[in-house]
Image: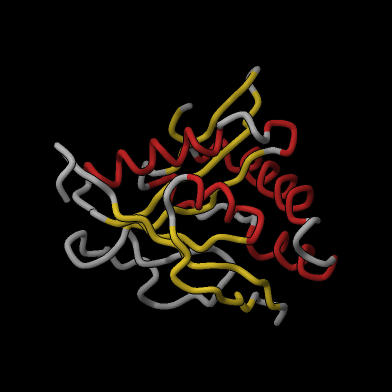
Length: 180
């Protein structure tokens, strides 16, 4: 596992599209998948530039990716707000877990958990006590298994008007010697 670079963008987006297509097929219809591929599988380069985005390589090929953010934006594909880039207050707000994808050839090998654990460690070091994410339906089982709770079942309105069922999830993070 390593930090992503801008040179990884095409390979990361390839993993995003493959993951969404293969893993989303059991949860979403064709129209929803096509829209998700169009609006959600684009890398937010701010994550890379902020040095908060990871990739896992196997045999020199990116097989998983994901990261976290100290910025307000919760997920790709939604409305762009003027304050999406605003910094979060670690005392009052939750860090964002963002853009987690595993190539279908590498699912169930612990790569998503590995990235999530690295993100949570960095989030703690940045003084956040909570992490929040917007999960598509295929990701909910992983996040639940890693201690995230659904705080809101929702529907994402993507750029073409397609609605994608999802869930906003949060986790309280233990820091230091076990005290919040």
